[in-house]
Image (cartoon, rainbow, N blue to C red):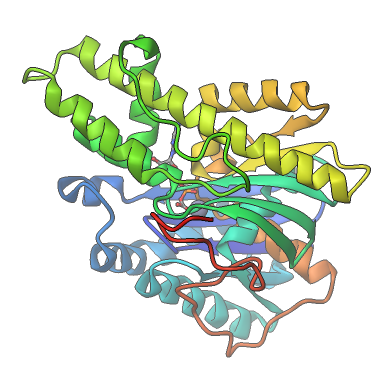
Length: 351
Ligand code: KG4
Ligand code: ZN
């Protein structure tokens, strides 16, 4: 079984060819970071236009590299949401058109499911597992029970963790996207120079909050003399990253406890999404997993940030279970993995 995966939900145009035997025959990702950099964040109209301009040739490149023609594909998978609708539509329509021409099944993939199952593309890890999903748009703890079957234990009540990295980078003049730049700067920093809050740490439940941390970073940056020196930048980045690590560890520990109380064979913690590319946070989570008798599983960095291989893989998992979609599958701006999860209390509202 060979599947083409297409990803266009945010600012990466991506196409990949993956087999059911876990061979990644091609995994092409075209970052639009350069186009969005002057604006310090993703501009939806620019993103949609860039997907239109580049997707066709990127798919051709991926098929060439995989040495497979359209006739050699067994199915087409494309992200159908959640994400920026303009971009989602570009990939979705393209995927449907190829599926129609090739006469093969089409799979409308939830981008979050792509992240959630990405670990199974590289490791034979069984369900259920605990998932910490940390990306630019999401910060959630979920029990992954099966393909299409998720229970959300916690989510952010305000900002996503990747967003906090990006805003911190912007305040420090590190540019966009911020995650990798903050991680690099933090390596040379002293985390204890500034005292930053750890929102919701020690509180009941598994929800997250990052807006207070973001504001605290802003206050610290405002208090420093301009222009910021290299050491200032590194020290703030390090303090921020440690605070994020403390919060992720605290919330994940609680989720692990809950997961274990419900599933006796629960001992697997998976981290996925763009922020999971962060080496410091991976180390912290590996240590936590060790402390609570779990093992940490994390995809390689290239499969953490947005890519087409995870979409192709989620498509393969669905195809294998006969969960194919019709060519009317709609694009979805919002698409929670656990539609039954109770709404998270908003910022300032007591849980
Ligand atoms: O999963 P992803 O590529 O896109 C979304 O679905 O949101 O995640 C992108 C996010 C961005 O906020 C980016 O700054 C963050 O992941 N990120 C990182 C690192 N690499 C990417 N954050 C922290 N450390 C990194 N090394
Ligand atoms: Zn993503």
